[in-house]
Amino acid sequence: MAKREKRSIVDMIGQTPPAEMDLVEKGVEEIHSAKKVSPKLEKKEKLVRVTVDTPASLHKELKKIIVDEDMDLKTFYLQAVREKCERLGYRIPD
Image 1 (spheres, helix red, strand yellow):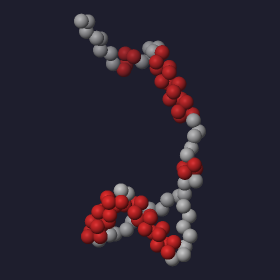
Image 2 (image 1 turned 30 degrees about the horizontal axis):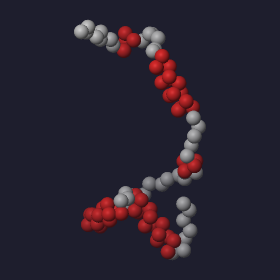
Image 3 (image 1 turned 180 degrees about the vertical axis):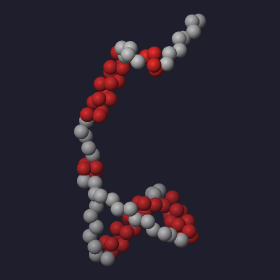
Image 4 (image 1 turned 90 degrees about the vertical axis):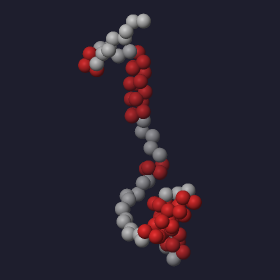
């Protein structure tokens, strides 16, 4: 069995790429030139970071709840705030 020649990237610079590379390059160009934007991304509102200091015991209980509800802490907090605001009569945009 013949031993395969080892080549470095430096050796390959300047060589004509194989035909498959042309297809790959064409595909990459199509992906990057596509202007498809999801409707959610078009209307994305500016976000504001909020830091909340939570007692460790409460945080532990929240983690149990979010695991049971199959959600993350961010979703839980946002849902809780939205529900509270709606109970108080404030309209919260989606």
